[in-house]
Length: 241
Ligand code: TZP
Ligand code: MG
Image (cartoon, rainbow, N blue to C red; front, side, top):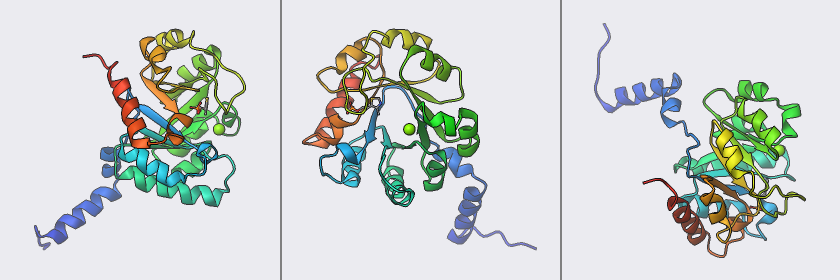
């Protein structure tokens, strides 16, 4: 006959079992929610600062979403950096997203993956969903109303739209005239990106934008915690009472 013990050994055993059947994952699952500040981190624009230091500063000061967007690194380097960033985000509420590669996102234990329009050729939405599963997040970049409409009808969890203003990673801009239009169409969170900083963010928030993504405004900030706090309080001004 089995003995029921209530000592710490039993509790640890139950915790292990709980983890094994995946219940903890359900409890720990992070989601994209509106009124988020999204940092797309990229060593290329960090002006010599270490990405891990930038991520630590941004996450500890409350960035809601962190993306690893590294274009020139080997898979091995991405695995190493990805695991460090997972560890930083796992001690916080920050959602961690890997750019470009759903297999890598899953392997490092990220909360989700972000696909560009060009990534969808190798990783169509349904294939990506079958790689990452239903519990991880999938986002996609869109650069026109047509692409937005397609993404909106697909199985992604959020849609990025931009570049709104002038930026370094793209040689064109959409401008802010379509912000209301895509928000009216949207059935999931929309993240606006491209050349956004504290001096132009109001234009977007006034049009109803709820989520803002930036690279340079944070990775190049003199004081990252102060900059994150300023963005967060600006976004918070627009949360309905
Ligand atoms: N996609 C559209 S604009 C952009 C990406 C990845 C870059 C945004 O960078 P920044 O420095 O905030 O303009
Ligand atoms: Mg990509």
